[in-house]
Length: 488
Image (tube, rainbow, N blue to C red; front, side, top):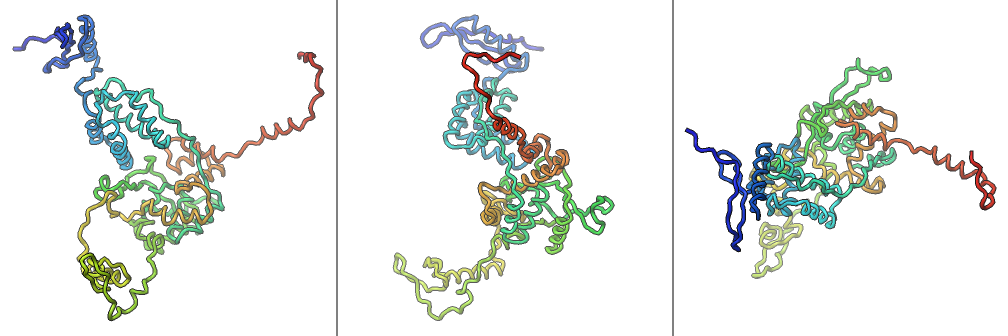
């Protein structure tokens, strides 16, 4: 037998601390819940209008539970991160870093209802005063807006605090493309053939770093000679690259204790086939044969690049000399104790770093490694261990890219991604259609590809020549003051 049906709302009369009569609006959020307060008012009519408004919001499905709006931003942000589904590991890492470094220290102690547009605007202004770039500020504001949009969708908030708040205007995107001479000098300044092949292939394909560093032997596919054009001899071997994966450097947490995670798609979300010219095809096939690259092997693995990026130093002459009979003893420590040079004790307790003591510790460690005694599993650090043999981008930049840029005499900030800009700009300058260029670069939108068309266009001198002709004409005879010009 059902119980008595409760009213959707009511007004409760009470007295405040000063003895004055106050009216509290109460409404029923659900059939099995207790009444919630919609505020206390000075008049009965205002309180009744308040609970009626909340009841109407419930009926329309736009009601915001005041108990949820009192949730701390810290708790909601961590819940959001737990339920957030990122399409790429780099995206998840970026959101997590922004939440940890910027959002939680600023808004973590506030309740969701306490985050007002004014506080968001003050935070954005403070980021600008602290020297953050406009692009960084817009990214952080977008991440905060994404979290608060979820709060509005889940009925934690009724009003979005970021609506109407503007971030600083970013600088217009400028595309830097190298000239032919820059590329030749850049290739000549690289430390070895593997890094040279990597840069050469990037210039001729426009691949991103995450795509070219994930290329494997099976991604180099021979083209059927029947598909050659009329201008390609039949005895030439042509290949294309099957670009369908990319790798991201995301750290231990997002890579199961490692450092790199291989995404099963590219940044643009589209698989593509990038054809190569005869010279690049021949060089790439010779490169694969020389290094005996198998189908699952990385073309530009760290183990293949490291010998030329970080060559071993020349052998220490001390390591080749016989150990003298009497090397003496170390300097006394605080307790007056001394240790023999060229021993483990001299390196350890004696804290001596002479060549003979360093030789002793090196021989000891080499012996342990040879006996398999130094193979204990190490705890991964914040970046994680490189268990996939991918080359870190920052390592390549420090060891190969930056020295080659300096040797080539290229002025200004030059990044590896500029090779992709160079590839696209050169093709656009040669008249390649925008649709072919879009397919080759893997862009989702033609608007992105249009930037390279605009960057490759020549400067129009028509207006400048017309201005020069006008200025070269003789000046007309001056008219008398007060004489009107004839009409028509």
